[in-house]
Each structure stands twice: as C-alpha cells, then as structure tokens.
Image 1 (spheres, rainbow, N blue to C red):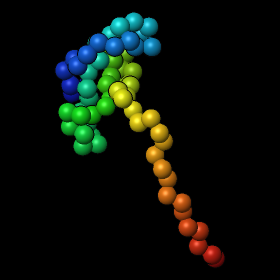
Image 2 (cartoon, rainbow, N blue to C red; image 1 turned 120 degrees about the horizontal axis):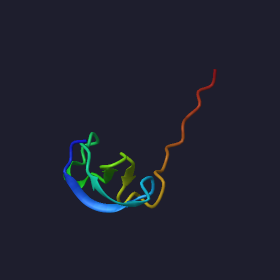
Image 3 (cartoon, one colour; image 1 turned 180 degrees about the vertical axis):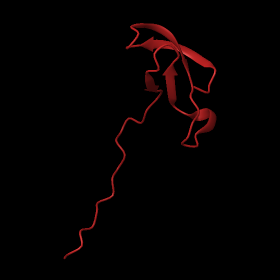
Image 4 (cartoon, helix red, strand yellow; image 1 turned 60 degrees about the vertical axis):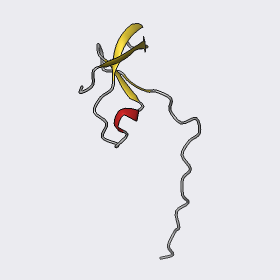
Length: 64
C-alpha cells in the first residue's frame, strides 16, 4: 500500500471499524481516487462509486 491512513470506516471482513488508506492510483485519479483499502486485512472498497452502470457501445457483427 502506498497511501497514508485516510479515514476510519467499517470493514465487513474484519467486522470492526478499521483505518483505511488510499492505495497508489493507477487510473490517473490522483488525490480524487475513490479506492480505499483496509490497513488490517486489505479489503478494498470504492468510496462514492457511480450509481448507474456504464453505458456499453453496441458491437457491430461482420458478416462472414
């Protein structure tokens, strides 16, 4: 893990309040990265994930 302890949250794996940190963001979000990881067990959560699924683009099927 790369981040410092960012906040305390409930961890469902530990079944307790635990410190969570922000890992190194490989998606380019920087300080706005929504990922957090439990310092004790490593469980990952998304803080404020999108409420709607991403729209997919229909694929075109080419005739053989």
